[in-house]
Image 1 (tube, rainbow, N blue to C red):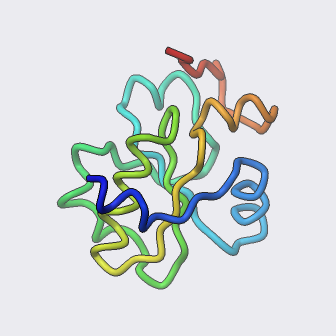
Image 2 (cartoon, rainbow, N blue to C red):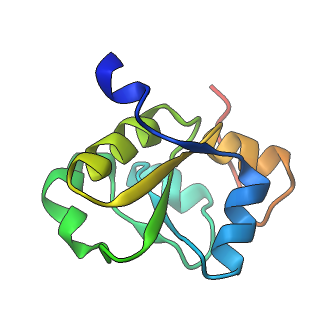
Image 3 (cartoon, rainbow, N blue to C red):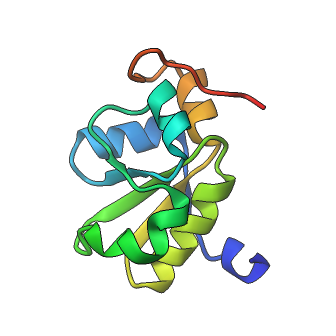
Length: 115
């Protein structure tokens, strides 16, 4: 995994929101269903990390993908997997914790576990 970590570009929450809202990138949430149900970014693609090895083909290979999880660890690894598959994927540094800390919109109830 260390070999993969250095190869994944990072993007901060505010930049990710700007890229998403401008249509320059799509967002992909790789958290588990229970995390998703407690609050997510409205309108983004949801593929739990465990399903990514066979479901990544659902993603538009012509788009840039910003991968999201709770803290940025799972999404970093997921972005590395997508990059190895030939997709333009970057990691949301700090994940949903940073997204929420920047007061960016989350669907109700808007709960992001910090632990």
